[in-house]
Figure 1 (cartoon, helix red, strand yellow):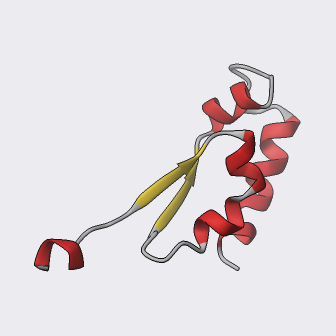
Figure 2 (cartoon, rainbow, N blue to C red; figure 1 turned 60 degrees about the horizontal axis):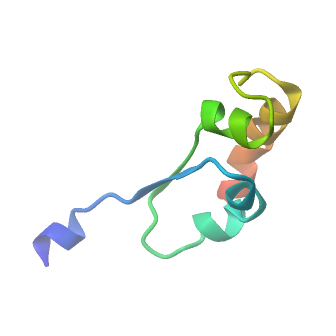
Length: 69
């Protein structure tokens, strides 16, 4: 019981499905932190190795608001 009370649950969004469902992922009971993986997202968005690409940056710009609702 003590270990469960002290656990930190971190999830990372890196796929189109994760992007689509990020609000629901963040709302899962017990999830403490939601991270976005820019390099993995660039691959998922079809712009491999380009974390500065507008597709990736647009998602990252909206990310904080989407996960804190």
